[in-house]
Length: 313
Length: 247
Image (tube, rainbow over all chains, first blue to last red; front, top):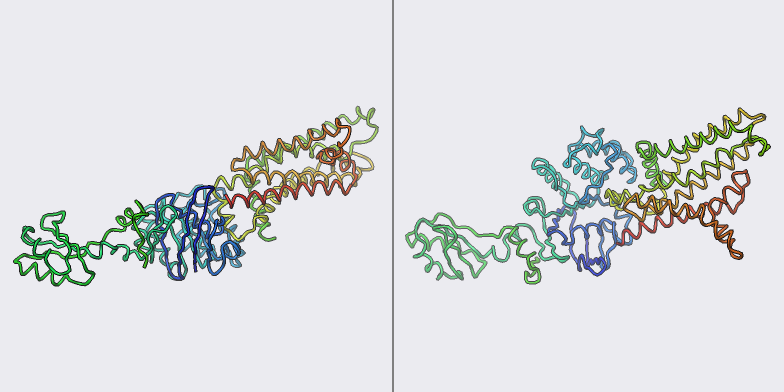
């Protein structure tokens, strides 16, 4: 539903995005993660037909974003980072204006339905200028959902919402994402973890990682590290565990009674480790893989993406 | 066409909640009304110099001039404000062609001026009652056609200029300066130059109205002139919106 190949955008001599290539399928929520200025908004603006790319190709809902921009715009719902609202209009009038621009046949029924969906049914007659930031965000979301778009592109959709509203909006995006293609940008990693089927980490205009949140979390390092916690002193056990087949190194962990093991294999060797601990006369309290948090991965990848390498499936 | 109407009707309605539009409407109608009243009150005195009854030009004349001052106030925010508020992103990602957006904005402003012109018809109507056997309807019709053409051209240029700015005050002053040049200053080289003054005379915005339409004369050249300026303004606006996409 979204296919991007070698997409590049230059602002004068500055390259905002460099040869981006990715895809998002129907029924998928794709998260776009990256620090400020990474190129997320630029990419979204190109995909929504707001601005042309310098080179490369992108199709949305089967239409080329540059050659068939109007067809793309008919099929995309877009919530920009700065929610574009006419503060002098009522919520209903604003949505009616957007419905007219989109030539929706049953505009009023659609507006009612959409307001219900975003939990704003009781505020239809209120002036947008008088609404709180969170409510304005929901009106913006209603505008993006109004025409039941095939593709939904949301730039920082939960920014400025209170915790309760954040949960509601995330649930809404997850529901919408079951049938449609959703591309959302965020720099809240836990948000990406909760609602995205796949995340794409972008830094300095380039994709530095692309995977499911859990795969990313398992990461290159995380899959091969284990934490062992025993009751007692770890010194005597360190050497024994270090000699086990498949274990590369064994070192004391951060807390008393903890040992961190770096494994040389991805095979399951936890039973052998457990047996070694127990046969050594120690009480085994805990044995679990240590995954890097998405935060760790994000920081590592965005700190130096030239040295960070790619972890594409 | 539907998109143009959607944009135009929003703009038209917006004027009725905008303080600037009310100030413009008040100044426009009050000034025309005062000049009209003075014309009638002095009709007997001036009959010595102008041995004819006042006609619709006593209304259309000041109206055309007032457009010079009021139309920049009506067009300044049309596209500049969309840019400032971030709603341009909404419009440029809606299934709407750039020229439809610009034309819709212009039409909204034009309908507002047309409404003011419609209200001002009360003055010629009064004149028609006061004068026996009534005013010349031809002069009235052509005069109002002229006013609408001047409005169309000024609003067209104003929309074009508004599209180039994010600051509506800048859009206002640039429009005003251009109108002052085209209304007054461009006529100066026309009268000074021994040769080649015709080009400046043709470009003079005021002469196409005050030398013909105000007295009820329809010249195709005048109509083409005002429509060309309108088209130029709208074209400039569309290109400016297009350029925004590339920046």
